[in-house]
Each structure stands twice: as C-alpha cells, then as structure tokens.
Length: 555
Image 1: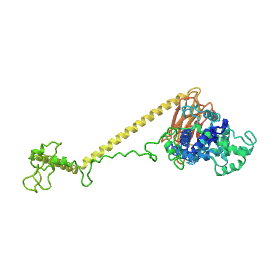
Image 2: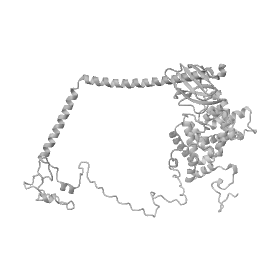
Image 3: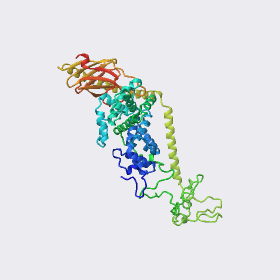
Image 4: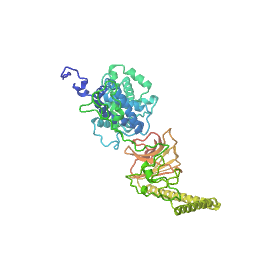
C-alpha cells in the first residue's frame, strides 16, 4: 500500500496508511496524534487507559482517592511526553502502564492484597480475550505461587537478600507464559545467565527491583537480543493490569485535559465545532451589547439603613409615643397610597400633620397606645419579673439533701442498667457454653470421631473431627500485638481434599477460651495469624498458631 497522499504528501501517522498486521498499535497511534495536539486522541487515551491505571492504583495504594490523583498525574505526564512514549521501543500501552506501575509502587503500597481470580472480583471476565488468557495462566499455578504473583502484581514483595531469587523465578515463568521472553539462543534458556536475566527482568517489570538488581539487569541486557527480554517482561506486566482494572468513580477528562493544547500553536477545532458563546469573538465581529444591570433598589448605607421609602414613612408618620393621642388629620389618614401627601416644607409652612403650637412642636403621631394598653403591659411585665425572682430564690434555697438524692437516684439507675446488661451477657455466654458442650459430647460418641490434640505455642487446643462436622476448643489463648501499623487476627482454616477452606476469623475472649463448631466436612484444622480484618486470598499465611492434623497426632 502506498504511503503517499493525494498531493504527494507523507502522512504524519504511519499507522493510518501502513498495514502492520500483528504489529498494529492503536495506543501508539493515539500517543502520536496527542503529541500533535489532537483533543479527540487525548480523550480516547483517557477512556482506554483510565480504568487500567485507576484500578492498578486502587489495588496498590488501597485508597480510591489516592488512585484518582495518581491516575490524573500519570495521564497528564503521558500527554506531556506523548511523543517520547510513542517513539520508545515499547508498545504504547506497555509504555504508559509501566510508568503508572512505577509511580504507584513508589507510593509505598498499603491495604489488603486482593485475589485477581476470585469469582466476585468482577461481573464479567469475557470482555477481553487477553484477560481470559491471563486468568488461565494464573489458575494453572499452584495456590502458593498464585498468591505470590497476585501480591507482586499489587506491589508487595516481602523478600530480601538471597530469598528473592526463587520468588523472582516464579514471576519470570508466569510473565514468560504471557509474553515469551525470547532468550538469546532460542527457547527459554535454562543456563544460569538466562535464568538470572529473566528473573531480574520480571522484578524490574513489576517495579520491585532494587538498585543493585537494576544495575545487574543493565549489564545482562547490554546486547540487542538480550534487551528484548526486558521489553517482553514489561509487556507481560502490562497484561496483568487487565485483572485489576477499575473504572474511576468520577469523570477524569476535565482534570486530565485542562490546559492541553493551549500553549504554542493551537489546533483547529473539530469539524462541526464552533466557538462557545463565552469566548471572545474574532476581530471584525462586533461583540453583543452588554445588557444594562437593573439599578439596585436598596440605596441606604450601613450608618443610615433604609427601612422603607420616604413615601411610606410620610404615610405612617413618626413612631408612636406611649400615652399620646391619635392624630386629628383626617385628610392625611384617609389619603390613598397611590396619591401620597407631599413632604413637609423646609420653611415650616402649615400643612397636613403640622401642629399650631409653633415651629418647634413635634408632629402628631399617626397612631398611639391607649392608657389601658399601657397599664396591661406594665402589669404583665411585673408578673413576669416576680416569677423570675421566685425561680431564682428557689434555686438558691435548694436543700442539699434534695441534690444528693437526685445524684444517688441517677447512680442507682445507671448501676441497674449496667447490671442488667452484664446479666444478659452472662446468660448468653452460659447458653452458648451449654450448646457447645452438648455438641462436643454428641461428636465424641460417634463411630467416626477422631480426637485431635493441637500443636501450638499459644494456649491448649483440642478438636474432634467427624465425617460431616468438627468442633474446636481452646483455652489460655492470648491476642497478638500489632505488627507495625497492621492489627492482627486469628483466622481458622480447614482442608478438604488438600484444598484450603476459609472458616472465618476467631474472636478471642478475655478469658482466652475459644469454642467453635464447624458445620461442614474438613480433614484437618489450622489457625494462622493474618492482617486485619481478614485474609480473603484463599491461601493461609505461613504464620501458624495451631495445627490440628489427625495424621500428625496418629489418630
């Protein structure tokens, strides 16, 4: 296919005209267009990669708010460096997600490690063929290795020194199954250098390598063929984000695209797009006339507030005086509001409402209180004052025995409520203890009952395991202190046909006695220390508190 346009010009985006086959990279195309200031390509990048970056941030940081801020920062930096990312040796999707993973891991991962293949992780696992491939690769791993890969994919790798070698090889095998590394010499290269190169490439692709490991990886990938191992590991790590994708809870377009394409040479608007009404019109076009703002109705100041218009004040007159007589000006009192009386003249001329006693006399009020109203108001105020005085004297003369009796009554009421609550708790505990004792006795006399003593350094543990049920009893169990910033709980696990079964978290009472009935078939029981609130990965931790295995006890 020709790469020239109708006028002999070379297209700016090679992918638009070249048939690349399997090498077609839509994200790289979007990055190149965004580097040229294409708003639609930038919005498409936010739509395509926003859920992948946000979900990765949620799984690593454990906070939706932190993940949202991280997503905005990563996408803005990728739009700023879009040309550099498009010209790199990595596919566009892998380049952006590699930057997002390194930024997320740098925030010190926290929170619980979530299972990537749990049935309740997402509602649909068939939206993307690559997603199904990644999930099948994880399900093919043993439970312990799968938990290791899930933890590493979420930024957790609690190994140091030489203990990092074997877990790194597990990660390398998983990533190699997703995207073959293509070790120099063909195949997977089982020699020591090839294994080390793959393990270090897997650690760095998941942003888990330290400075020494990165320096060693640069030395091992100095050649052209060996450098491909590192690139393929990064591509495989990008595919793991398919299982951690979570859509943001808010629209990110405004936050990410703010100021995009506004500097330097702006790009033309999309076809059919017009200038918004709020923008400045182009030269030569007259701006719409500004509408005149209505004049404010309130013209007063803070020192002289206006409480009505001058006309209203003239109709009502000055404030009434107690004991005053009604005004004798019928003309002003009966004047309609539509024809207000003129204001009094400054020269002191006679007019409505003026008095004949002289120029210095006050004008007659428009209304006034009668002497009877004044007397009733005075009597009511005197009664209220007497009532307040009696209440104050009663409070001052309150005897001490009365106050003591009120305090004692309150304390007795509180004590009765506390005692009733303790009595209810004691009765409930007694009922639960009786029910457990009955269940223990019932299971002990069954033909298939197997009493199992527990191996533990924290209390005494006993269990009875039957064909369809089990009972667990322990005493002298103490809680564990906090592990740094994490609280720890005791979690009960069972095993059925070699598969771990989560039986919930154990509550440790103050007396250290634990009584649990397991209403399902288990072959053995195990109690481990887990981070609060619960380990939901489906795999127990290696910190075993008690082990109740019939094979170990010989029963």
